[in-house]
Amino acid sequence: MKAIILAAGRGSRLSKFTQDKPKCLNSIGRKSILERQIETLKSSGVDEIVAVSGYRAQMLEGYGIRTVHNPEWEKTNMVKSLLCAGNEFNEPVIVSYSDIIYDRDIVSNLVRKKRDAVVVYDLEWKRLWEARFGDPLKDAESFKIDQDGLIKDIGRKVDNIEDIEGQYIGLMRFSAKALSWIVRLAQKAGRKVLNKMYMTTLLHRLIREGYPIYGMPIEGGWCEVDTERDLELANQLYNDGLLIGAR
Image (cartoon, rainbow, N blue to C red; front, side, top):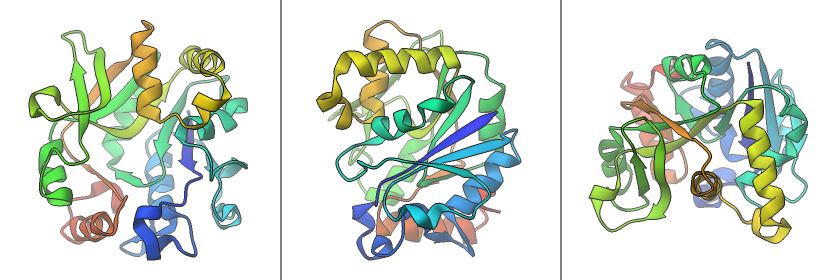
């Protein structure tokens, strides 16, 4: 199994912590987020890792992984970075944001999934969002799933907590067939739209066009590092032994 880590962005919301390095090189405990991701992925059935670089790309060299570069990283978003790794689309891949830490069991379960497109979501998201933002609706997005496990709604800003049955965490698995769906949709969207497209927007569009995107529920066991508060919280969870994937 191969993994693609989307690590092109700077992470401006971390301000001083990304002035001289990519966001994924900030540390949780004594290891960087990237090092912890590599360890977790390799111990969970992933044998090849490719990182999509952008900001300070040279700093992602030397970790025993391959890199591909997104030369337009300053002007583009996650979907464009994923497509920069298009040469890897001939087999199933795990796709991971570069600013998240997750338990090994989450990745192990995801690797074993047989569906063409599987997206991890957290049923216990509210506790984490309260710790991160105070108000659980702040920065939360819609997520709804049907009785067959298919995602029906994702990525919209919401005012009603009833529209949230979980939260997308930035970790997913695509078969070669599903990756071909993504390429087809990207070609249809056009360059201008594609360059600004978020991953949840891509997933929403795939769902709207009838492609089956399944959810894989988890109950905690992960953390995102997008702000200074997140970095503080992730280190707190690590010190308290609550991030198994960071051990």
